[in-house]
Image 1 (tube, one colour):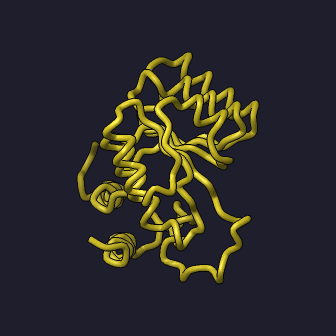
Image 2 (cartoon, rainbow, N blue to C red):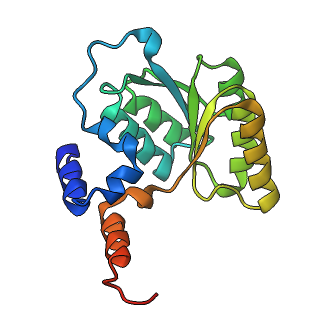
Amino acid sequence: MNRREFLHTVRALTANGLVLSAMPWFDVFAAPPAAASAASDRVRLGFIGVGSRGRTLLLNVQSFQERLNVEIAAVCDTYPEHLERAVALTGGVAQGFNDYRRMLQDGPELDGVVIATPLHEHAGMTCDALDAGLHVFCEKAMARTLPDVRRMYDTSQRTGRILQIGHQRMFNPVYLESMERIRQGEAGAI
């Protein structure tokens, strides 16, 4: 399914506007490209963890990077094959790192990072990135323990940086349709 088909499907599933009104940011993907955006307006991202899920997120960002003036400036993975593949996917543009701390400290200037690593690494990596002044999109689940969740939240609040946890299925047309059918009472009492 291409982007246009996806947008058409979601709009058809949400004809009453309830879901789209809950996601006002969604129309940015349907909007025509902005007139030549300046390089200074470019959002520079780093990816920490580019295995299965991280690679998918990287490819998703690539699908709209020109439209939204986004650059994938750095990728990081401890597994050499994943790292090499991710650098190649960016056409060699992204700098590759095998230690996320080096990427945060010595890498290119970044605005944010996408974290798609094993769960036990989320809290430390997220807090380090927030403390480095970066916004963070961290794949679900947020963290392994409630104290780690709290530490991530507190760090986001203290630094004033955005922390978003990725729950990709929240925006899948199949789940959106199911949620709407439940709201309309089609599933009966739950």
